Amino acid sequence: MTTLDGETALVTGASSGIGEATAHALAERGANVALLARRRQTLESIAEDLEAAYDARTLVVDGDVRDRATSEAAVEAVVDAFGGLDVVVANAGVGRGSDVATMTDEEYFAMQETNVDGTFFLTRESLPHVTESEGTLVFIGSFAGRFPRSFNPVYAATKWWVRGFAHSVAAQVGDEGVAVSVINPSEVRTEFGSEDGEPFEERFEPGTVTEPSEIADAVAFAATRTGSSAQEIDLYRRDKYSETL
Image 1 (cartoon, rainbow, N blue to C red):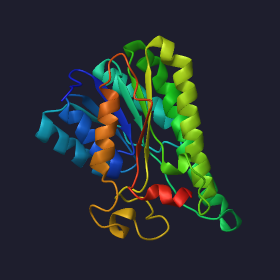
Image 2: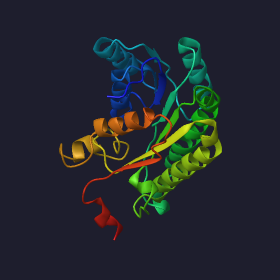
Image 3: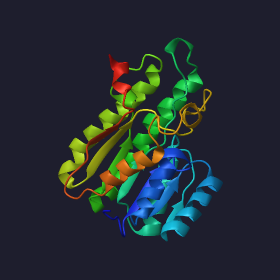
């Protein structure tokens, strides 16, 4: 296992699902891990688990990524605590809403502000530090960011934006030694979908779709590249391509 000894990672959406699993995967490889999400008490419990399991150094920086000040404060706190920043995982996202005709303003803005604005704010604040460390930016994209989604066009559009933004940032800072990766899952057994009904972790049986730990392993793979960049990793349900036909 390639290690991240002495490196520092910041993970958004870290209170459950992919974010929580990613925090474990990075801590297991020796990284200091900063956890960012809205549920502080949950983050503190996860931090305790990381410290006990891996003897990791952790930091809890709670807040809402839709608020620009959250990313500013989080990055500043991480750099103050650990002296730098090497890995940033932009994982926070929501998928509320479905068809355009019935989507409410609240649903629309929640997705835009979380998936798009939150990703931009985090990248802008962390980029100078990741450039200094020649570190890695990892963006959690989606199958929906590669193929049209008739039943949730706005969510799909935000993920197309994330993917395009990530690759364009890579073009901008690759010459400065920054690696940029996009991880595209299809369904993952997490709390995702709970905004509108049954979450994926209840809708899908174990073994039928991707587990959070599999996405976390892909993130860790991307974070441990040296001299190269795992530009894009797709993790799809085996029969998922039939939906594109």
